Image (cartoon, rainbow, N blue to C red; front, side):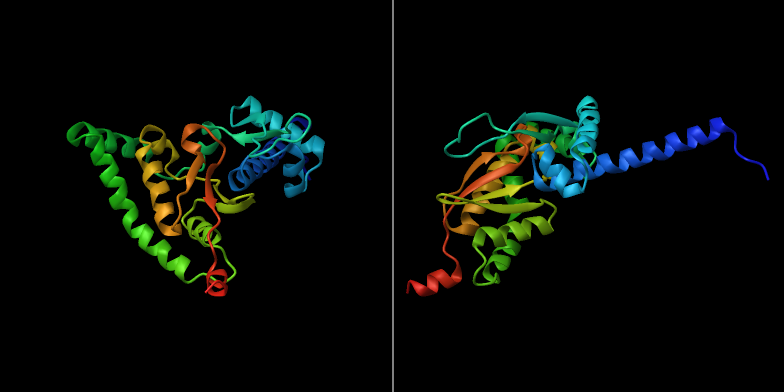
Amino acid sequence: MKTAPVGAEVDATRVHQGEADASTRHRVTSSLLEHGPSTAAALAERLGLTPAGIRRHLDALLTGGQVEAREQRVYGARGRGRPAKVFALTDAGRAGFYTAYDDLANQTLTYLAELAGPDAVTRFAEQRIAAVEERYAARLAAAEPDTTPAQALAEALTDDGYVAATLPSSTGEQLCQHHCPVAHVAAQFPQLCEVETRTFSRLLGVHVQRLATIAHGDGVCTTHIPHVKTPSERHLTR
């Protein structure tokens, strides 16, 4: 029975290790996409890796330009000490997750703006989101009594690929969208973000404030939503 040469065994081991590393790094970037900028400790805990293991993969992703390190953004009063370092996806890191035809969309909207003016892009965005708004309104109306409107909206956005969640704040909630399928287009045409923000305000019945967007280089699209009463809370105040 013939045995493989030592060199071939070494090559096979290297290939297997490379595939394993690529798979793990995809898990890291997927986790950053889903949860937003994260510390190395949080990533290690979520993925079941050792601190040394996660740092090795983060170093490779940093070198490859898929991930960047930054200080953790703090909303409200900042505690003592320096903010923790977090790791976030770069545009290059997000590129592997985009499925929209970004170049075609940018060229189309550029042509539309040149042909009919910038307002035409806004009207296009409003028309595009009209059907979505109607669908989301139905989701909010059918939400469970103890589900906040912002949580119901986050669930609807997640179903559409925005990987959204809510976080409590001292004056309401923060709606966090960890993925934006049209971020590359919105970077050139901010009207898309502006129309989306106004839609959130109409759906929730309050004035919301966009704090950050992926299109402008932030790790997460973050919208502050003042407290909105749930259906059960509205019933108690009658």
